[in-house]
Length: 401
Image 1 (cartoon, one colour):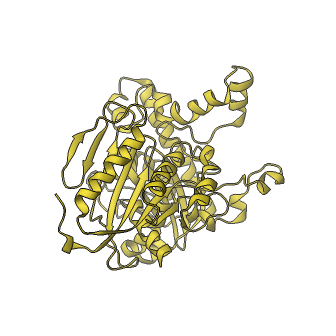
Image 2 (tube, one colour):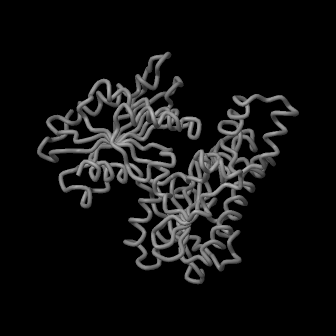
Image 3 (cartoon, helix red, strand yellow):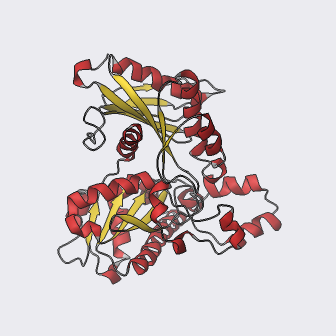
């Protein structure tokens, strides 16, 4: 069933492509980029791509199993989304398609209109973000072939971190590595850009001071903001750096990689599989990448307890490093799946920041309130849902002018 065409005249479609899921959303574009509503006009998600559990879920209540083609499940999932959008759009015009693209390299500090040349360039960054980059590019390629007249815009997670000081971008490698593009890029930029826009609305001047945002999901990172700009972040050259994650290792002694390759004989592919898919919460616990499941088993499974303890410790340790860079902390913000919904994980992190005078209000934390710090806390602690798709839609309209 189509939504009433009179409800909106034009929309921006957003695709957020991961290795096994695609989030999609349509945003009302009638009022322009600056006044675009933050809630999607319509949207949903296909998850379980590549498995028998693939499903399509939409915000209007549709939930159905999908039988995706075995050889090309991702291509098939894109087709399902395209047909679902057609069924909802009616006479509504799609002005552009915005894509979340994890890596924009050293040359893209702003969204980019997609054409064949841009697509070819972005393929060069696949090794730096193998869980996301190839899938966003596949969606672009399909649309370029099927709808060449439809504007597409690549919106980069790295772009927000173009404000990092030079000293934060440098890697302690021979300078020729810098000249070849090896540097700290930072990721989750669409999420952090949203926070830079919404936090001043919620917290006033406090949000323009010394702020750390914790984007904690299956991928996880921290960003130090000052004046709403990125000044330091935990992810670096690739999305493997920094915090321990669901299946990714985070920061790791490079000597351990040399050992795995030279002594244990693992090749590059095997090491990549280990670092991206077999490490983090899943690797340490041996049970799950989901903190909710680990919390239910930690009392009787030492490995689950160890995984949670290491996850929290790494976050506390890295927050401490960012506080040192900022010279103090005024506002700590939790966002993304774990950050928004896992009260016990938040409680443990804040408990580790007692040296800063941080303290949570137990009731507010349990209710996932917008502010969870206690009156006695020396800094404000907030929970703010992220909205990467809205940022991408807004950027696409800005590119179109």
